[in-house]
Length: 386
Image (tube, rainbow, N blue to C red; front, side, top):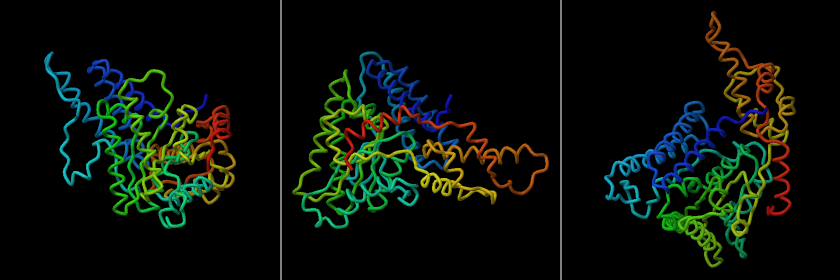
């Protein structure tokens, strides 16, 4: 039985609990909603505790902050006597120019990751450069316009979020992160207004010379095929579609780009697929990328001289980038464990050896199977646009 990437597993748990909390809120079962949100927070806190250097750690902390705000609101609502009401909008004091205001659960910051930090994915990087970076540098060379919507799809843990964050760094722009689960759970009753607020903010920034990347993670949870939708969800989706169409206006040269990421492209509703003119497959890393990733991940670790990244890369065929990161961590943990369990402790730990990697690989199988890869290949044949 293959092991699951612990970060992905905890992320999935957090999202599932947020969805369950949303369902409970709709049914006015506030006690259950509070319990589910607390479990989502626990899952995210466990990621931060065990993986403090994870590239998404700031986003996890932001999400925890947002969920705690929601908890306070629900606890107040649950304590209200029957017959009394409380506004569905969480009141949060926001300082600064009103034009700077975004919904309080939107993450806006400059990412630190660059293309150089991402191993491989050369085809995806090239497509992104042509769709975003080149038009920003020389818009006069694009009289026919350029894509404003880019879909990144592929197996979990292949670097889709890092690619989107790196783009914002390459163009010296702003990066707005939206989680699809949060969109639906936190925008009840205010959905279309908040969608418009995000895009108005992005357009205003662009008019002032600052390119903006609006990144939506787990896009299928937002724009997927739904058989039972409530009115608020329909309005949010329609407003998003309207905003996406507005970005395609050839008479303007605003640099606002929507990048969506999904592990389930086949779950997307087809009318929304065509809004993403570039649809880029982000595959598992090839041998060269695996070797480079190993070099990046072990740069701060003492290695035995006999470590051969090329040989290791061959052994790791079929592993995702996040799988490989976990293998490196497991191999190094063997060294740390040995240090603490030894009676005669030296000042420093011993180097990581090939045997450490071999044992780590034995204990961790790839998180993506061949059947799943076939699904991506079939979808790519039908919808790829690069």
